[in-house]
Image (cartoon, rainbow, N blue to C red; front, side, top):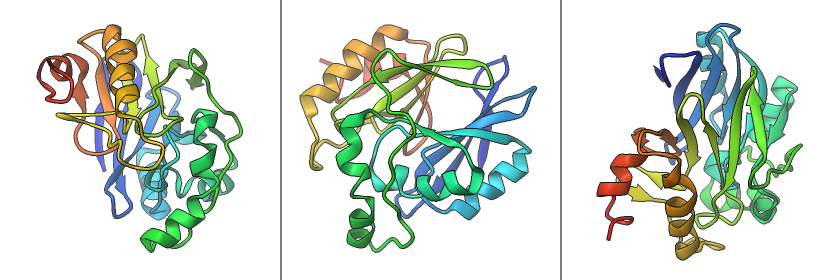
Length: 220
């Protein structure tokens, strides 16, 4: 587990790599109240639970950025363990979330459950963690229902597999759309500002400005 403050103020984040895909499950929480959320509990729930205990936080909800197995495969079980609601992704990913058990069999991953969130999210919605507001951006392309969570005050975003440091989400999966993904990144995310720090679904965090000027999939 790697831990970092997302800004000088009070939201903190910890990244826990889970599943054979090394997906970045992320804990976010208010530094003062120690209340937070789990973002994309794809699996390895014992590892996530150990990180929650290590940080000493209380989880009030689960966020899902999209419906692929490495991000959502453990969400239903974690909801039951923590007795909290799941918010996200966009309803367009219902086709993926309702087939998680099938995905699990394909990849040989046991214990995966289909899941329906307690709240589907739309572009322009807001979610909150311990009073910290996150704007929701529907950014299809990697999956039809991918969403990004953006905290304007802290200048940070949780982007799932929409954008990576030096890369973008794959669009060769079923329901992928390369043009839609590029459009979402350039016209929804980059206008938020070059200074925005992001945590992605795989690999190290990054900054929008760096990707805007150097990401080979996004320049030119």
